[in-house]
Amino acid sequence: MIASEPQPATKPWILGLTGGIGSGKSAAAQCFVDLGIHLVDADNAARWVVEPGRPALAQIAEHFGAGVLQTDGTLNRAALRELIFKDPQQRAWLEGLLHPLIREEIKQYLARAQSPYAILVSPLLLETSQHQMVQRVLVIDVPEAVQIERTVLRDKTNEAQVRAILKAQASREERLSRADDVIVNDSDPAWLKSEVERLHHVYLTLRGGQ
Ligand code: ADP
Image (cartoon, rainbow, N blue to C red; front, side, top):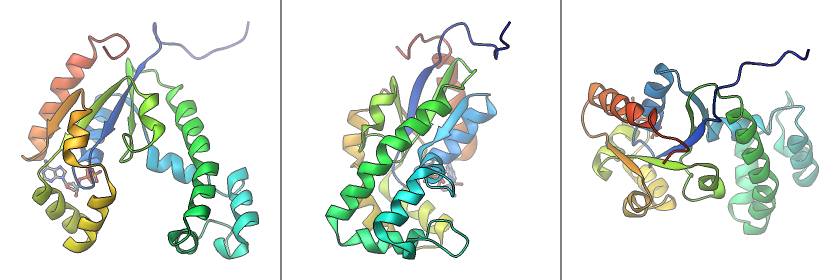
């Protein structure tokens, strides 16, 4: 007999967790992990696909030259960013290579879930085709002033830089209009945890996220 891992009774449905920079996505995600929910972060998947030994890294080095590699063979992100920053064609080439790989990486990781539902955390869930991978969308929402204050504190950056990032992301209104559920994370971490627990109990009753 072929040994196989135990499978949940039904395939877990996928919750997309998103929000603007500094809204509290990672903090909310950790609360779900503490409840035993399987989770993948799209930012991590994007890093995994260009690790040394993965085909994408070799393709990037071939396309852009060895200058995009560090001496230890890992990707030099700053150098790559510099190359595509002012060149939309090169950016499109890179995205064309990486986006399908990132989606596949996320899919494979989510397929291992043993929890009743699983989560894809992504800052660009609604801005990319990643939203097609989820059955339900949870938005972490905070007023812009709180978003800026928390990000400045976390990243030791300044308000102007955070505002520039905010401009490149979906607007608060756009995000909220596409949410199935919203957590307003403008209070303390204990409130965030209680809101996650409240939704978790609802999610456990759902089939296919509906
Ligand atoms: P994101 O992943 O959306 O960028 P984070 O989860 O990293 O945001 O949260 C941004 C910062 O705000 C972090 O330093 C985090 O610890 C802090 N934070 C998140 N939620 C709260 C909260 N309810 N109260 C106080 N600080 C918070």
